[in-house]
Length: 393
Image (cartoon, rainbow, N blue to C red; front, side):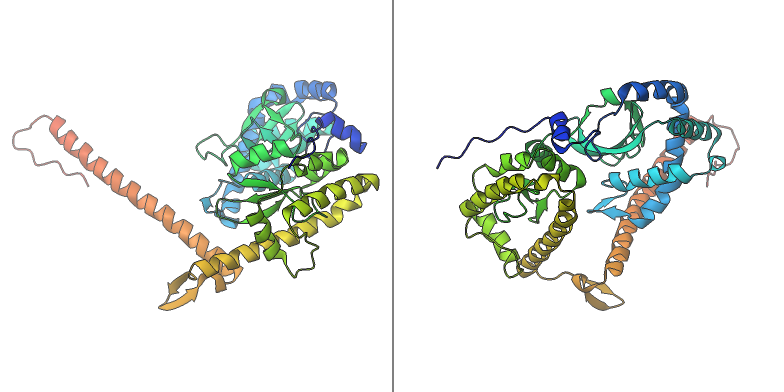
């Protein structure tokens, strides 16, 4: 069966024009009023660049313990891995209220330079996009600088803070859903398909993701991605919805998960594809892309559907695998029956146990090394007649 030609995704500049935006899309990695920001950056920030880095490192140092206690593990990985957004938001909030007197001298100088820059009209924006063709990145645009205060959340051994000229950071906006899919597939290792099962939401969220663990989610109900497709009258969504129908097996899984939940579901993927494209054209004709109220119902609707999908996937997993238990004080507890607070405490205990095991291994290694050094020291000492044996404790 043949399909219509896929529309070409628009450039970010065309997207902004299509939505009537004078500035950027929400959190778009782009410098507004480049000349003015370059002048302010040169005056206030570049002369204090090392102090600014010291300031950001000091604030991270103040926050790390608190953030680690709040969420010691995320998706099975210890802090700070995977907590880029959480760290970025915490640092942004702290920079607006931190007392310079609580910082080292160089960090306090960096904070003063930052605040002088902001008072003079400098831009400090959280931005999100494609970093070097590899990751979805949360960072900051500070004047003409790229600031990453969570540079260690993918590789923990990297420096916590990275500061670069924005134009050299290789940090670009997500152009369309094809671009989004490319990064998501490599970064998250998801399998990604067109959303031909929920036609009414397809103009806003045209992709369905299946993770390595089998979980299914509708993507991507964020302010940026919703604004991106609205800004070009749902053509970016239409581009991926034109593709061949989603696999029948996945369609039936999602249909089973959402059956009886009040959703209008098509009979098969081909019908779903046809209806999804009709909705794109219908919404465009109604100029729904120019109605900001659209976002207010889409985000909670997608969140609700994703919860339903998660519950269904969890139930399927439970049918395939016995419910895991844990023994505490000689009593067996079903893990899934524990409260969210109990699960969080258990996760923290498991994390601490892992860290203790690492420390115990390090102590054993250090003790072995110390014994070797003591033996080497004894061998290197001159023999003194009548002296006692050296004792090192």
